[in-house]
Length: 313
Image (cartoon, rainbow, N blue to C red):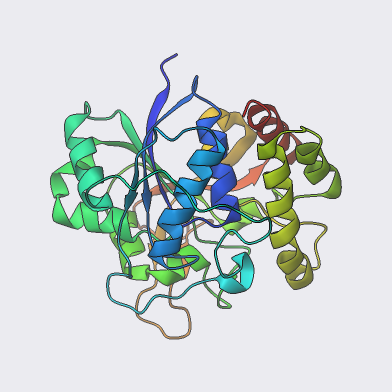
């Protein structure tokens, strides 16, 4: 089976970093055409830096990393240093990357790649706010029909919000961008908090990373040690959700996940529920179904996949 061509659009973030490592450790399943950074968890100068740090950690200085949009389409940037630390990758000490940014803007790279590759062969994997993807779609509407699939982390329904009472962070940061993407007509798979909150770290799962005895294993264990403290205190859970690796794991082993094809609309007006993903889970409206909304996963299988693949690096 041919490896699936993907573009990872990201705002690293410790969990973004693990997702990138999982993709780079799985060449038989995934070909990473490039990584596009967007402002989100931290501002753009840090997200593009962090993406390059992760590529160097994986021994993949050949991967092209592009800087993208530094602010949402219509709003002031909201960031999440309270979760990820001031650098976005707080925890273990990290050297500054030596690999250079790729020349050009991330949005141009997305457009050019989708036009160059055969239609229906490139999957977009947004792990942060959807600003880069929406900008590309608005600037070059012809590329929408060329996308094989968009598999994204964002939104929530039963788990409601993690940045406001109603909204998940990635969607809340740029709801107008999310609205464009969800209404685009591109095939869409959504990893909301409903599923990522079932992908919890535990002491034994973190210890399994550390027991690899590799630099990657040590870094992943240290990152998860750092950011799980916030979520454990917030939710009273036994660990923290590894949100973004769910996107990559779905591409490799989709049978680990289950969900429903439903309509999801994005709230862009209400001050009370701005950024809410209004998911018609019970199919009570006649709105057209626009995405596969994932609701559950096999957590042990997910962590087994992570441990197996990351041990290669």
